[in-house]
Image 1: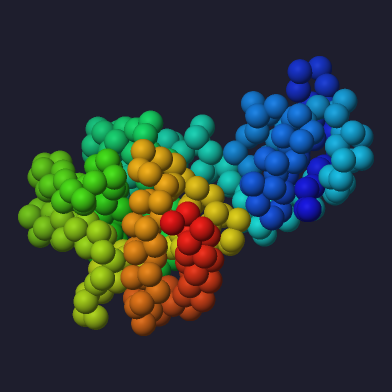
Image 2: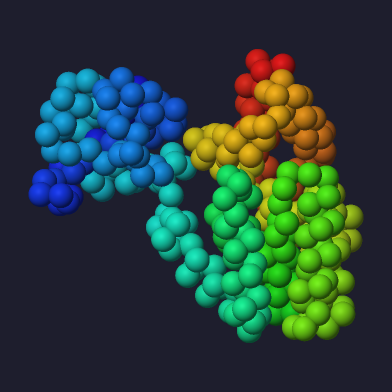
Amino acid sequence: MSILIDPPLWPAHNTFFSHLVSDTSLDELHAFAREQQVPQRAFDRDHYDVPQARYQQLLRAGAQEVSAGELVRRLISSGIRIPSRFRPEKLDGVLLRRFARTLPAPELGRQLLAAWSESHRKYHDRVHLLSVLEALDLLTEPDFDPDERRILELTAWFHDAVYRGTEEDEADSARMAQHLLSRHTNAAVRDEVHRLVLLSKHHDPKPHDHLGKIFSDADLEVLARPAAAYQRYTLAIAEEYAHVPRADFARGRSRILCALLAKDRIYATLTGQDRWEVTARANVRAELDRLAAWH
């Protein structure tokens, strides 16, 4: 068990609070909290807030006392930590500022943000959008062609703008891009965004497809997260398909993962291969092993 707790130093509600975390998995954290009757409402995305009155009892139950700084360092290293910019109260502002740099069309930015904020989205949401945009930052140099960068960023904003979990999502998102960008970009930009959105269905860019390779890798960056963060991703995907029988979901998901492993390289760019290939393959194999028990 790797349950950590920092000293009760954080004032609120006429007492002081500690943070209770796991640096291994959220499953471990939730199981410990249930055993110790820590209420679910105390969970805040990557930790439980627990009052000072519970501190000694949680230590006796096995939580390891660490400093606040050590707790944060270990949580970040585990991949479980959610940076402040990804928290709901920050996301809208961060994303709208990014969109304003991409295209001076604030009404379109707000319209797209509303689409990405739909309540049924568990993985294909604003966090995924920001993650893809930040992955594009990693895959492009500072002197990257600004027109091509804008195309890639617009593709990120549109690639899951329509998300219902159906075979038509990418085509509908591509059509939305053509329609909504008609007032803001020329036909060449619209056509390229349309093409790249369609490419996101299978992530199979041609060898000469410079922008396609970059966008495909950015969209698949999630596969190379630390193991605990990858688990958070797989749970969110499963939640989006909760309406599908578990065995059917496992078979369908396994087919997608096996197709990824069958490729010579999951990532098409040299940067993606260097940064993510080894970890992604390990994560995908581990998920396939877990899904095998669901069939």
